[in-house]
Length: 296
Ligand code: AMP
Ligand code: MG
Ligand code: MG
Image (tube, rainbow, N blue to C red; front, side, top):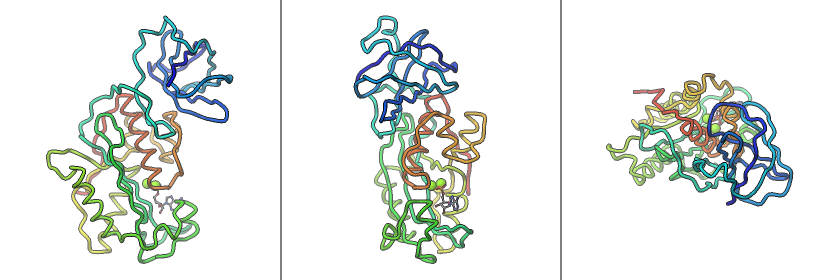
């Protein structure tokens, strides 16, 4: 990990900590910088050699490379805050997040059978949960299983195209009832069923826990555990934090926060990672997450 110092020519926004997209052909990296009067301190993981182009978050500006050695003008700058990088790796950091009211956030994003036209009933085919630390929003544990659909057991080409899930990924996999039991076991192992541990699910929209899970559980005569009956809708949280509602969901929020989209849109596990990144960035900007929905 080396520090690179860039003299600022033009940089929009009033935030003291901003994200930059650093294009070093052929790589595109996300990095952090801390803005001082004249310098941006950048943390990156590899050497420097090529001309650099920086895209600033609120306006496109240019930056001039100054030195890859420590500069006296910026020695007093604080260390960068952490972020989930595109590679999934963390830069060394001392996060300074606004305190949250939950011990853990549980990021959930179901994928379900679908076709060009609405199909009924839809059935869950991917069931991922990321356990995030409530203050740092780091990923602490992952639950993930594909789920065997029963009514429409053959995935449509549309569904495979949309989600990246092919037939062999769901064939022979647990039924929803079994997947719910596996998720419950994982929750217990992670200490999430301890009444003293305050956690809440986070989804992109209300569909997962307001419509999809209760609907399929009702069809199957299965009870819905209480922990699935309250949640944070990330789209609402984003609109509270940023002042605009993300109509097209994840891509809008990723772009609005100058983050890089990870993986494939509509892959459940990748969607969860992007949700986690968005949450981490909102928390870093000082947002406190609160419950937005309930089935209780
Ligand atoms: P998402 O979490 O946005 O990836 O979507 C969850 C589920 O909603 C998908 O697995 C599909 O069943 C359904 N879905 C999402 N987008 C579409 C779409 N454009 N057309 C049909 N179904 C969709
Ligand atoms: Mg979703
Ligand atoms: Mg999804």
